[in-house]
Length: 336
Image: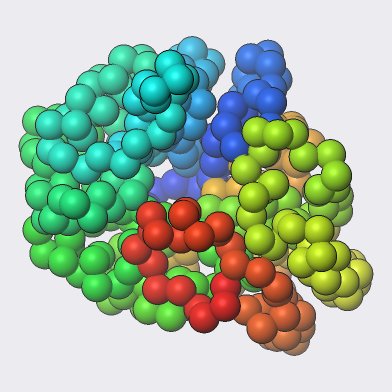
């Protein structure tokens, strides 16, 4: 497996996002299946595993703590704080963004217990709580580094300006942003800012939430808990338009000797050496398929064909509904 720098760590160029096991895309998969995917990924050379307090309200961290931690020396562990569960008026758990230093310290202690480890390698602020200056939140994470609770600090879904302010407070090792052929917002400013500051850009949803694959999602089968159900790009009329892009994209993939998912991931790897994709999956077959994208060498003509087909002008719909867009701090391409 090709290696890339993730802050002070050297990890596999392709990582594994661990949200899918129990969060956002419908019903959780079994623990046995989660274990199979985690261990198959590790055996395939994946050494970068990414989770969060939010995912399953701690369940993803518990699963990694149970099944991955016996192999702790073989991988780099990333998790996130700043979004956690609180009890709503109806007694159900709901998500809350809270970047206060005391909350982040407690998030970390809770994550360490769930993950069954004494240190988290890379710890992200999952969302910037705009009620708290970014310097305060990042300063608290810096204190966790000094205390030996975490080894490096990251940010998720922030603008270039916020990254620079945070980096001046405490060195930022990575910025995690949605980045794929159909979400190009990091290209506005964050990608360049990361390059200038020596910060890794960790690209989540590199296959466009399952869209750029051999089996794109059937929106009619979405579970009520699948958050794509409320995403504008997956609304029936919009999705029908977007699906017209798939046949020509699949043809480009076939000509390049790739599956569509491999082409989408390999495109990111070719964009810049500081980009690290973290596709998520609940399938061993897909995990191995995604990992094999590191071997694909794309010609300039193939890269150009991808970008001409799938881009901010050809993809219809915003990436998030209105409320979710207000929670991020990223530069956004108008109309996306």
